[in-house]
Image (cartoon, rainbow, N blue to C red; front, side):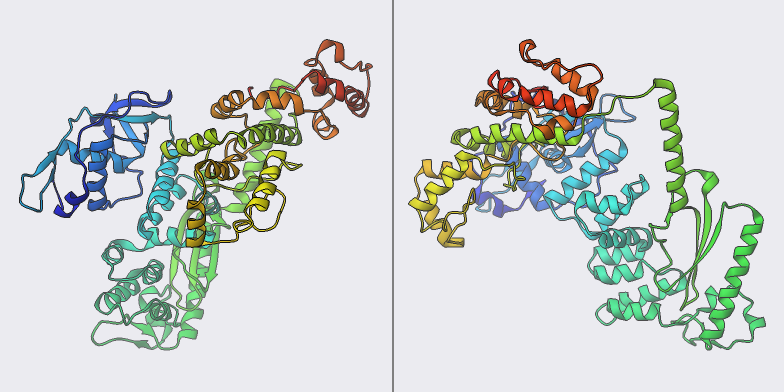
Length: 590
């Protein structure tokens, strides 16, 4: 392939470099030829220019970030890509041979690698749903997807039993947007998709079209195709809800009704009844008669008639779902109260009944499990896990705030790898009790020494006086050591995540804690408290006492209450702290 000549002016001298040989332990190198694209990747279009640029960058630097793959479900020795198809395609350009043309007439350069080019991958045993989630997340984070690609991705997730509210929460969208995308994927159709993809119609127009069907849909498509500027989304919406019952939608005997029909001699506008009110009354009666016939057939667990002033192509997900036991599947006859148009939704399940069945099945399962395994030990409550998490965070962050170089290392590390333990963007961590003295001292010193940069003292907060260019210029005037200290202020609390306090510290957090002696600091600062002990059951308190130094173990009389046990342990709190005792749940290493 040939890259645009304008790209040559800023390219450095190129050389082929394979990925680094020192890869993380969970990343392996596999030949490019062993990778396969996934049908679950929601992005269907890729920008040629950015792929060219990525290919030249890979040829010069190698691949800096691993792909995520799973073993191919049908092809031995191959891998299906969950995240990283752009990198795969870019290397594919190099495998085919990427020609760079000199705009000044000189010799062109061909960048080429073999099909055995080694790709860094993380192999994970992913389900279809997990693969689709990873692929969708990567595409949404790296580059904005088209609404149609988003719609298809959400539709695939919905087909794999992820509910609209779960999709909205997972990817940071409003529930209304997710519902609109699902309707778009299901109802736009081939012709509408083509008009939206080539830019003939807007997303708003496409959303209206996706909620129509039959001759009305084709009529609206013809109108907007020929004059998209005139038939705006509002205009299309009015045409779908103007109260006309089309003759093609009538469920009753049109001839026997005696109703007058308005026909377009040119065949452009669908025929409709002149007296809409009478036609709609006959339509409602005919739909009820159809419902009774369906109920009598005993083919369905239920038959619901659902009148609506909205759109009939999709059911409210709060009321119905499309998966579950066949014995619960029913029929919903949804019709528009203004246009009379009917839509059959077969094989759906009432959401309330499905949830009730799930609760009953879960209760039966728990009863069976208890009968088979006997009573289970109550887990330690989250209060204790939270206290342990806070204690580790204080020790770790307090030490990191004084280790400017390590904060810089962690920041740079975030550029090179995806990790659930560190983030590149500084996010405010929850408060962890008393102020960290290291941070508070740093804030006080900066507000005193540089009042031009920072406002008056606010505990543990640096509030800048300047913005934009002024702030940039002021920071450029600082010494490197000063900048490193400010970096440490913003990044010291980015290690040791808060997603779930029950999760044990990751390998990186444990490694850093040991290196900066945060684990030793924890043994000095930790003191057992009543809230921590109260999160345990009486049996768990007995197990906790067994981990204490033998000479400091409180004597608990048989039959003592939990309150009495807590009181006896608290009597030893100071001595336990002096001895450096820390419960396993609080320690850095599990």
